[in-house]
Length: 491
Ligand code: BES
Ligand code: ZN
Ligand code: ZN
Image (cartoon, rainbow, N blue to C red; front, side, top):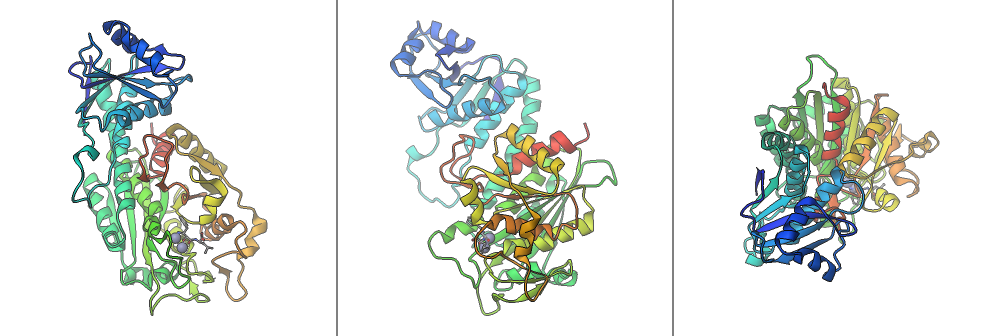
């Protein structure tokens, strides 16, 4: 897709203009309507189009208008904030992407240069597809829009703003690609290779294999991967865009490239979804991509625990006891509660080596999180109001939903083991997401920390957001990028 900024709409196949709720035409919409002799307003009336947010109406070939067709885009009744603007631009794209038209011009009236850039950014996110494994496709199923033009009052300012936003969109796409890949293609070493390739952006990437992790004593992580033919990996990504010697911010991702459950094997139905059990690691990789892409003035580290959870003759058994890098011992009651075992060593390693300002881990950790919050909210568990408020604040600005959950100390005893320091699940299913978070907390060594359980949101089945197509979301990249930008970057 090509994105261009223009100072006037010309040569448009489709000209998209905004209409506010109550059929209130924006300046560009009114101008098009008067050129068309009032036929746009007439069409809106006849087509029950009121300008409600998310609604669109295509008016084909109106006489008097140069464009092939005019697309009325509902802007709703509330102020056009960033999210409403993104949704309008993305909805415009979806309304005509298969129409046969090749250029879409957004003339949204009175946008700031930054808003014009954001409209292009929204279309880029909305147009994401993962088609690499299709060998045939009916022509009418292939989007026809190849160029998007956005009208702006200031070309240079829009282009500059777009460079920054496009870096974030590229990063979201990188994360979505990782999440979309099947597990026969994207196993730990391949994931690590793709992350290593990010060095061209200026990131520093180290990959640790099993021998190195063995030396560090990372046996909770290694135990998860020991039933797999694929070698476990730890990817350590550094971005040094801040002052030299300044404490970094740290992000840790669960990268279970496939989760069969191990010996505590999962039922067959729906197991294919567990290719996206690396969505946390993908989000961290995407975040580091975004920080480097827009040259963020911050020091940041991303640590990815990459494993495959398989049952075989060498697999970990229920009841096994493993020693974590922290020295604490864990009785593995259920080999399907593997994410917390991976994160236990990854979190400990991160705080031990980097002494970060805070650590945020992202993980598709528990099915219980989906039961608690439904499919459009991720959970935050945190020992720090500052860190969780910064996340919540940023998430609101980018339209990713989070809800803060409790981590009450009274439940902590539920993960005490009779024979080791702890066990890897609570008693039964009650509070399953909370006991998982309490388990992780035991490996944070008191560092300010937040755990984001993104099991509900990593994959979209029925996304309510037009910037998020069906499938891999790249959830978390935008929130954490914005959080770093707003709260932790040098200005
Ligand atoms: N990867 C799963 C959690 C999950 C389930 C993510 C569904 C996305 C969709 C995780 O490793 C898991 O299996 N957790 C168990 C924990 C239980 C055994 C304590 C769960 O949620 O059932
Ligand atoms: Zn599992
Ligand atoms: Zn898992």
